[in-house]
Image (cartoon, rainbow over all chains, first blue to last red):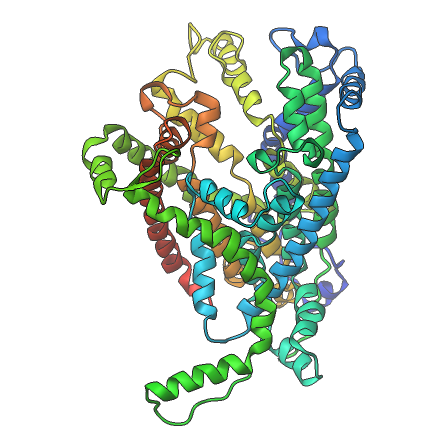
Length: 298
Length: 313
C-alpha cells in the first residue's frame, strides 16, 4: 500500500483536482477497495437478507436450508402488511403521524440543545464548566438495569406517563450528543471566535453562524444518531394508549402474531428501516469535502 | 468566549468567592445557552441515576419498599457468588478483545474509507454502519452458526472435510465465548466509527498540502504526523463510547446463545445484572452489580484519558 512516490513539485500539486489525495498511489487505492469490498459484503449481509426475505412468497420463506436469492419476487408481504395495518382499531395514519411528529420534535430539539451546550462547554471558560464536563462523560458510562424504575417514578411524578411528552422530553438531552458536539467544536480555532466577537456578535450568534457551520461533520453524525434513536424508540410501559403509540411498537405488535406472518415481519422491518437509511445517506453525502477552514491566517 | 478579568494579587477566601460570583455574572450568556440542556438532563438522566445508586445497599423486590441492608449485597457478590466471578472474568475477556481491538479496527476502516473517492466514501460508510441499522442481525448469525449440518458454516467446514460432524457453535461451551466475541466485533462499527469518520472530515485539507510540500512521502507518514494528532477529541469520544459498549456487552450474547448460556460460558456482568434485575426481580442485588460495573468503567475511562492525554487540549 505504501508505495514510494516520486517527489512532487509544487506546480503539480496546484494542478491536482480538489478531491484527490496528495499522497497515495493507484495500486494502494485498488488494494484498499478490494479489502473494503470483501469486508463490506460481510457487513451488509443481514440488510440484504432481510430485504430478500421480505420479497419472498410464503412457500419460499420456509424452504430449508434458506436460499440467498428469490425465485419468484413478490410484493404480497407488503400488501399483506397494509391489509393488517388497515384493519387496526386506530387508523394507521395516526401511528405514522405519531412517529413522524415525535421524531422531528426530538431531532430538532436535540440538535438545538446539544449544539448550544456543546459550544459553551467547548469554547467558554466559566465557573463549573469542568464539573459539568466530567458529569456528562461519567453519565455516558453509567449503565444500570435499575435506572428505568426510577425513570418511571420521575415521569409519573411529573404526570407525563401516557402523553407525547414522555417520549419527547427524556430523549432531548442526550449525553452522547453533547459529548460529540463538544469534542468536535473544541477543534475550532479560537481566533475565528475572537474575530466574530470583535465584529460584535453575541454568544448565540457566534454559536450558530460560526461554530455550528464549522462542525458540520459532527452535526451530520448527530443528526443520524438523533434520528435513529428517536425513530426506533419504543414507548414501552410509558405509553399505553393505542392512539399514542409509534410505528416500532406497532411493528412489534404485528410481529407477535407469529409464524404465519413471517413475510410481513420482514416487510415491516424493511419499511421501518427506510427513513433512517435515507437520513443517513443524505447526512453522510452532505458532509463530504464541504469544510471551510480557510478563514484563518495565523 | 469568556470575558477574562484577571484578579490582581493573591486572594483570600472571601475574595475568591467574590471573584467566582463576578465570573458567573460576567458569563451569564454561557449559562443561558447551557440551561435548556442541563435542565432536561438533570431531570431525566441524572435524577434517575442518583436515585438508583443507593439501591445497591438495599433489598428491593419491586413490590415492597426497599429495605436498607448495608454492604450485605456486596459481601454476597464478592464472597459467595461463583457465577459473578465467572461473569467478571468473561467481561474482562470481552473488554480486552472487543475494546481496544474494535477501536483500532474502526479507526483503520474509517481511515481506509477516507482514502476513497467521495461517492465511495458515503457508500462504504453506509456498508460498515449497516449492522447498527438492521434489526435482523441475530437471525442471520443464527443461520450461519446453526448447529446442524444446514448451518452455513458447518456445511462449508464439512464439505471441506475439516469436520466429520456438525459443531454446536451456539451451545458448546468451548466455542460460545469465541463466537460471541466475533459477532460483537462485527457489530461494533457504531457510534465510535461514525465519530471517527466525522473527525477525518474535519481535518484541514491544506494541512495535507503543506505536508506534501514538506516531504511526506506516503499514507502512513501522513496518518501519524497529520491525521491522528489533529483528531484527538474525536478519538477520545470514540474511546469513551467503546468503553461503555465493551463493558456492557451482554445483549448480543443473550440473543445469540441465550441467557444463561451453557455453563455460563459467555455470561457477562451485564447478563448477571439482567438475570437478577429483569428475571428474578432482586433489584437491590442487580443495583449492586451495576455499581461494581460502573466503578470498573470509571477506572477504564481514567486509563484512556491518560493514554490519549497528549492529544487533548
